[in-house]
Image 1: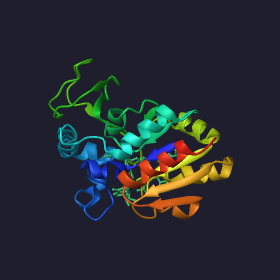
Image 2: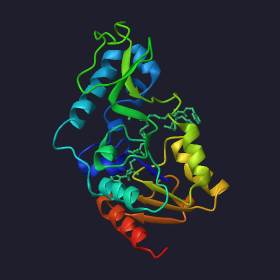
Image 3: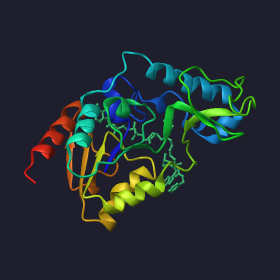
Image 4: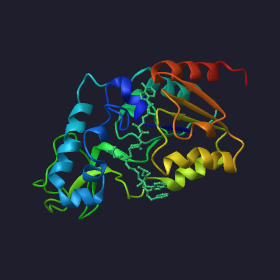
Length: 232
Ligand code: BV8
């Protein structure tokens, strides 16, 4: 069971949230990543996600060695590998991971709050757009999980946490729940080994049996090479 956060996509050129020059140092989380903020000023929220969506569509932005190492693990590990990401970018699937869940949604998807249609979307989105399904105007929103909203796939996640033998957390600061609580759940209910791979200790660092710090493109491929070459 692998949990990833914004740190794994940093070296691909995508911003993190809480680092010095992070996203939340430039815009207020309450304004752009809450349902209340969207109700107050939908244009501001669309602008925020349109900018991140067009950056993600920039050909310069591609999966890095850490993403590719996780795809290799899914292909070569004899047992199950389940990848849960807090990231809304599509770099894991572009690297080749398939058993993947975006618990906070996807930037290249939108949904209609009137008819609940979900659809792929790579262009600018605005309040003037009508839903291709129900034609209601102004009820389309990014398919992302905002603060105060229920994350996606929680049942499937807890089912996997309960039976994992290895829990690996990569590139996340451990600030946001329920994701930040997964390591405690694993320690409480399983005998799984727990490892944190990150640039620096996260909020939950002391909860991990093993911690390795450094850039994801270095520490993740090395850890997975060791895992795959370990005699079983
Ligand atoms: C919910 C999508 C009910 C949008 C995001 C318990 C206690 C306290 C608060 C709460 C609680 N339970 C719920 C809350 C409220 C809230 C919350 O946690 N608030 C925080 C701020 C205190 N949680 C919620 O509202 C969640 N919903 O709880 O519903 C519920 C309860 C129980 C069970 C089910 C439901 C919904 C939260 C989702 C919000 N949406 N994103 C968007 O992306 O725009 S959160 C957003 O921030 C990201 O998705 C990510 O999940 C999160 C954390 O960011 P990280 O990925 O960790 O990034 P960060 O910048 O913080 O850290 C980067 C790390 O990488 C750093 O450690 C850095 O050192 C490292 N790094 C940097 N460069 C590198 C690197 N590592 C390796 N290599 C590098 N090169």
